[in-house]
Image 1 (cartoon, rainbow, N blue to C red):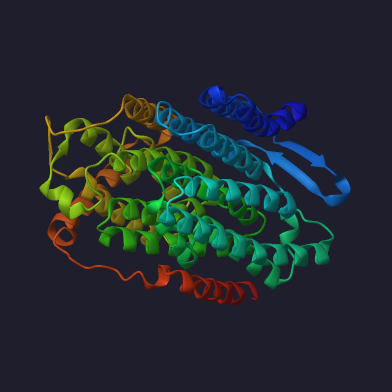
Image 2 (image 1 turned 120 degrees about the horizontal axis):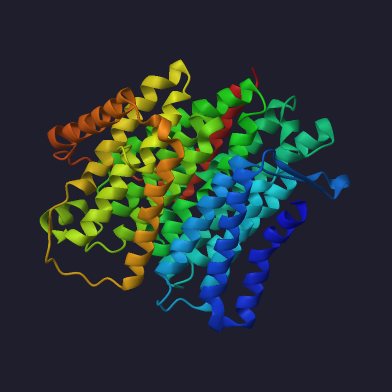
Length: 477
């Protein structure tokens, strides 16, 4: 299995090279790369013990592939496959598909890294390829958004590298396990880098502009899987010790509440989805032991919602309230919205139930408030007016991708059937009902526009500094 793992890591990069040699096969080669990842993920679920590899022993490069990795790898495979299907008959060039499979491959590598150096390399490769996808249209706006993303990403990795060096000075090892017993400043700097990269808490305020201004398939890829490249390392670090777990959990709660607070008041569809991505990352972090399952369900939902949002006649919720959408678009929009709200028979129900079951007592109230906020946010989609014969100009590839993702949401629901008891179903429906009631009585009538001052480029470094101070304060005790 070790040899298979090394070959699997290399396959996407080989396919990316082949795309430039045989550009006519770009879509087929990219799709085959995602199929290989899905097959490997299923194999990990069947393995009785984690697969551990030690490469370049003197440099401490170690890889671990286990069931937790499997959830993220499967998410990567399904989301990337949906994006490729969506772009199948589009005018996307071989360059676009090559960067897509390179992002896919570098994320796979990040999901099995167990040391800070190999993780750094994987994150940097994925960041550069993601920048090229964001800037692909080559318009002034896309290039600016891409450069902004690259700046934030590279700045975060500078903090990360300094922290990794401090870990090595203490233990002469770059392994994640060496974080335990390292100086508090090492933990603070590494976590700051990962928080910024993933979009955690106030460090994630760079994310909405990047995801909302990118092309539709790129937004789906970024929100569905790319932001999770730094989430899995945080989950692994949280499992090292109770002290580190407490820091990750606290930021998870703060992230969930901050993201949903913005989302319930946002009037732009893609920005609302981006803010909600921040909130859902918080749900993944609050219960590290079961975060993989939640990451899978979120990836399927959020990629489908971004693809659907890109096909709506407007990004403004006010305009959509006055311009009914086609019922055939509204149906998958409702299914995905119900899933992320935790409605039974869909994957989000089991994921939320499992997460809530693994919460600490101090997290319970805050995360239930965040769950109600999720229902309020997606009530904006669910209660949009719709008619059967509204005009629509949607390509068949859109429907193939959406059916693929929605089918995944129904199938993944079967992973955790233990959630289906009277208490779990009743709580889920009650939470959603409270959210819908709050939406109709309060939030639908609100006209509050949140300031974007903290999202401005010149303020992002200040936000990073505030997060670093908070991390130092939490790590020193």
